[in-house]
Image (cartoon, rainbow, N blue to C red; front, side):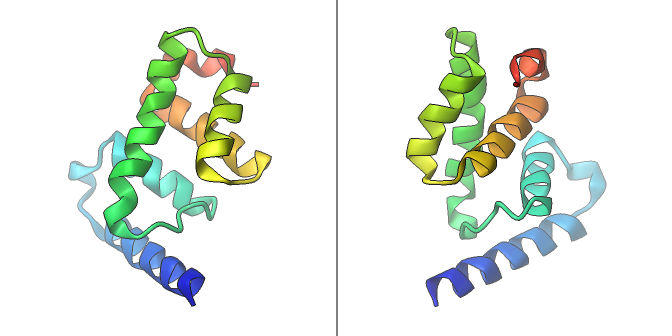
Length: 106
């Protein structure tokens, strides 16, 4: 049941993002839409802030010398996702929030 609620929340949140005016779209919205298109968003709308903060932490970790593999390991433990899901998350966060680090993506 919790999974159904999470998916329903994600669907409603995604629908709200898709129907929002494009002029208001920014990197956060782009990131969430990309995750939704990959089927990774299953968080309630009140958890979106932590998803964005976690994604932005990817950039600060790169700035501190982290590697792509290190990012995967760190977030795998935090998120409890599969290797593929974490890889998509880190790659998407990198491309959206800190594209200067995109060459580090494996």
